[in-house]
Image 1: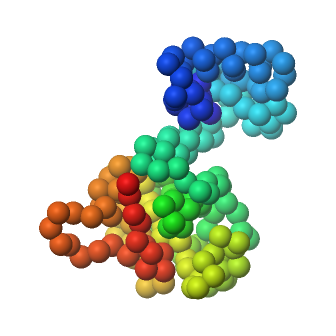
Image 2 (image 1 turned 90 degrees about the vertical axis):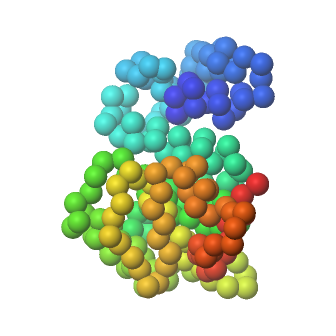
Image 3 (image 1 turned 135 degrees about the horizontal axis):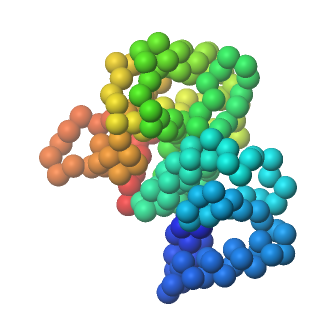
Length: 202
């Protein structure tokens, strides 16, 4: 997480969140509780003993995932937010699994453009995950009905993809996603999320 991420998430109720974050992070760094990379501005911070290299090419991707969390906080705090979820070889590995406003979501943060083959392979892996039924044994599942999370793809590119087994929604950002699913003044066809659950914003 960057200094600004930490300030926004953990110090947003402080009068000067950046100053408070700087002081706290410097103290924790000097105590050896956290590590940091000066390759980025503002600095990026890690748990102490973290194995990721300080110049890793994956850091910008992780920062994008934190940005999604921050964007979600602007509307409601997720009750679950797990990064890079893994089930089994050959199955989908979502960037994020979240339960947000009671709705389970698999979120793909796709900032580069995929080829048709790449995006179809990704969806095929989600289909394989659906067929595996592993998700239906998760502890977050509703007791009344087992559901497969809605697959939310955050990308500026729109892909010709669909599934008969689960809902796929494409949006440019979390704010864009909210505009798509929140109630409108005029009646519109509802967007169904996983298992028919409706995402309630506000």
